[in-house]
Length: 360
Image 1 (cartoon, helix red, strand yellow):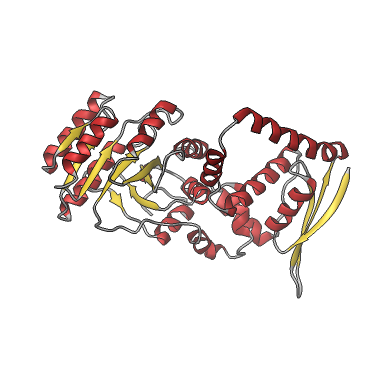
Image 2: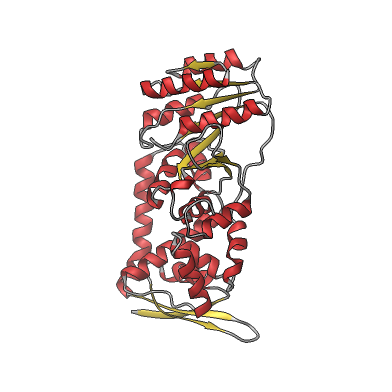
């Protein structure tokens, strides 16, 4: 085994050095924090010689095979890379995740100083991912500063009264129809001329539900079962209405045909503002996986539903940090037009660190 000691300002930086020099297969043997005039950390890592020798050739071969298999035009490859690369933050997070998983599989863990360990456990207990919790540990040793650290990673939508089309998408059962009704009711209440387009003709119950909401609110409704009918509905409402809300069917996010249809709809002459709804009481892995499928679409904002049903809110932070999208609103119950909230950054950070159920 080849063993080497790495020195850096933070644990995250040291782990990145380990990955670059020894690969993600390296095993962390020890960690130590040094104090004094120039505080730093020391991480000792090792890797089996055979693993180290084979890492580079295997990586090159894997790249060549994937390049030959895909055979995509250069322009398409460039666009795909831009979509996948939110910023350098994602690369850093993936590096941390790979190293932590490798350490776990090898029976090792990161040995943190007591104050950092308190912060780490605090965040893990609230369902924040380990690599994200470690990132926070590198930025503060004071538990009371955690909300401030989280706030730096959270964005919220700035609401305006401009004319637009707002389309809600998301997995089955996330509450799109009820949320559309809440948003439409809020718009009507503020004096904006509003209309609805229903793309969820897949379920008879959903169609009837939207009709009931449109009658109660006194606003027009158009049903559309395809792209052509959707564009006809837009043309019908575009001149006379300030805002048009679009309800969509809940489908499996891995349904390529469905995603392609939504992509065509987003290419309408009038700009479409796309809101991806995620259930706050959902599993972290399922939430990340769903977004991974929907990110093929030009998502503008994330909204979290069923906040009142969630027990821990760390998954919200995980998703927001991973994909760097602003939060448009939260829904906190079934009442229409109530139970909708337009949160501030501090409100979201406070929600994430609370262990109790909503409201808090």
